[in-house]
Length: 503
Image (cartoon, rainbow, N blue to C red):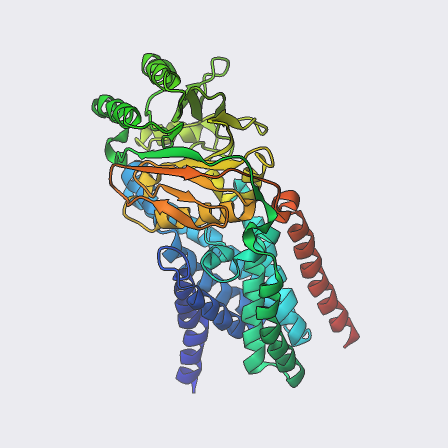
C-alpha cells in the first residue's frame, strides 16, 4: 500500500508536472507546436484541480523547473563560453535563474490550491488565469524583468493573432490559460461547468471571426522605402578580438558600398570598438552615405565624456539624423547591480563584465530616408512598453541585436518570435538586423516577409511600408491588465476567506 501511494505521489508530484513543463516549451520557437503547450496547460490545471495549496505550489514549481530549464538553458552558453564564468559558477547561475523563474508557476499553484473550493467554473476560467496573468506581469517587471517564454509568444502563428493588438502578449497568455481551464471543465466539471465550456468552445470561433484583423488598427503612410539589412556574421569568440577589428570594418564598408538603398541597417555593435577610437572610419562611412543620399544605422559604443560610461548605441550616419542609446540594459550582462567589492572579485577570477550607461527614457525617433524609426537594441524588444515609447511618431520599428552570445541554441528563433509579437502589437513593420542571424523583415501583422539563415554573411534587399495610427494595446499598454490581474487575484482570495468564515 505504501509503495502504491509513494508511486502515485511520484507520478503526480514529479513526473507528470516535469513532463508537462517540458512539453510546454515545444510550443515556442523553433518548434512552434502551440497545441502541445495548450495540452500541457490542461494537464497542469488537472494537477491543480484537487491539490492543496502546498501540493499545488510544488507541482507548479516542478512544472516551472522543467519548462524554463528546457527553454532558457542557452543562458549557460553566454555565461560560460563568452562570459568567462568558471564552469561551476555558470551551472549555478543558470540553475538559480531557472529556480527563480519557477517560483512564478509555483505561486500560481499555491493560489490555485488555496482557492480550489470556489465554484469550479470561476476557478478554472477566471481566477487561475488571473493569477497566471499577474505572475507574468510581475515577472516582466521584477529586477527590470525577464519575460522570456511568456505564454502568448507560443501563439504567434496560431489563428488568434487579431487579439494581440488589443491586449498584447499577456492577454494572449491569460486567454490560453482560460482555454486550458475550459477544456479541463469539459472533462471534470459539473454539468453547469461542462455546459459553460461547450458554449465557450462554440462561441470562440465566432468571436475571433468578429474581431477586426490585426492590420485594422494602423494604416499605410507614405510610399514604401527600399532598405538593406546587413548581417556581417562575426562569431562571439572573435567579434571583440583586436585582430578581427580591421576585417569587421572592411566587411561592413564593402557591404555598404554594394548597397544603393536609401536606408542601410547594421546589427548591434557592428563596430566593436568605442566610437571615439574609430572616428575616422565612421566619418568615412558618413561621407560615403551622404554622397548617395543614404543613411546607415550603425551600431557601436559611444562614450559619455561627463561620466566615462559607454552607451550601447545606434548612430544615423550620412543623410539621416539622430542617435539612439539603449535604455533597458540586461542585468548581469550589460550592468552588474552588485557592490563594488563583488565586481572586484569577478575581475579577480577573470569573469568579464561591463557597466554600460542607461540611455534616456525619452528619445526622439531617428529620421532617415523619409522615415521616422523607433529603435530598440537586443533585449529591449522583449518589452512592449519600450516599443511603445516611440509611438505613434515612428512609422517603422528597427531592432538591432547580437544573438551570437547564444550561438547554436534556440535563443535566436525565440528572439525572432518575440520581435514578431512586438510588430504585431504595434501594427508596425520591423527591420531586424542580427550579427549572426536571424535578420528579418517583419510586417505589421507579425509575419516574416524575408529572413536570413544563421551563421552566414548576408544582405536582405527589400522595401518597407511605414504606417501610422495606434493599436489599442499601444495606447493603453499593460495598465488594464495589471488592474484586472490584481482584481481577480484579490477577489479569489477574498471569496475564499469569506467561504472559510461561513463554515
